[in-house]
Image 1: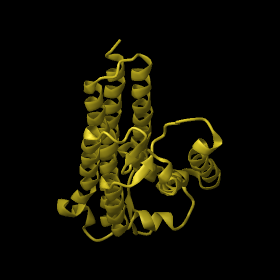
Image 2 (image 1 turned 60 degrees about the horizontal axis):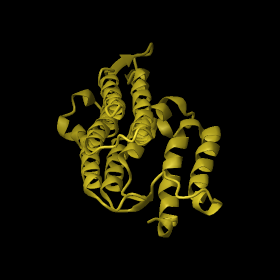
Image 3 (image 1 turned 30 degrees about the vertical axis):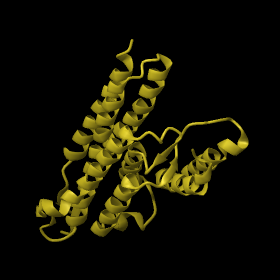
Length: 254
């Protein structure tokens, strides 16, 4: 029984590995249309990696729930959880950004032959996530709130990008997602948010009073309303709401 939560954690890691496979095996190609114009294509199947990261997030939630329900929490489980998280929410999302960087460079002549030095910054995200997890594991003051954005939140945010790219009918999205400078800024901002000590809410309820639940109600409303209005753009909007609400309610955190 004590190993059941660990099996959930390992499933998290397996889903992360599947996400990496689906991200990298879908090659970027250049095709010619009837007029002879060239088009840079990144196969839509990369969105399957987003699905696997989402499944990893669900399992990541369940392993802690199962561990508490079975009273099977352990130091090994804590360390194993971090190892799985760095794959599913660090490396896998970094490979998504890696592919979007390749797509951005592919717009220029001989762009598909761009050197690794221009693409490697994508993996700064994974390094920042690993640092965030290591700091969390030795921390003794993050039981009621977080210091820095949790890596699963970053992973879910990045996983939404392929879904936004192919399913949002906003003209500005396509050129933005094919701009290399946009992705370098994304890498820097998200990496900073993880390694920072910004006081952020943990998704735990200390009580069920309206006052205690208000931050979560606000975030949920933003997520639901934006999902109805702008589809997958709801994910980054909810993420932004999480940051803003956490900072606004920081004095309420332990």
